[in-house]
Image (cartoon, rainbow, N blue to C red; front, side, top):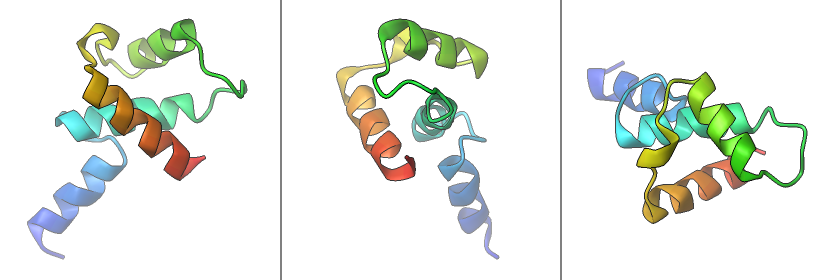
Length: 73
């Protein structure tokens, strides 16, 4: 397996500190949430639990997060 393939896999599951990796990390944590609707507190708690700054998310990041959640849930 080539190094770039390994990096892609790590990023996919949130094991990197790239923008997409951080978004994926939060998405996998939010996927554990038992609620059908994720509120702001759920989002902030999930971010903090996986060491991601919840206030660093842009609108574009939130769109990516929603797409990732739709894909994994």
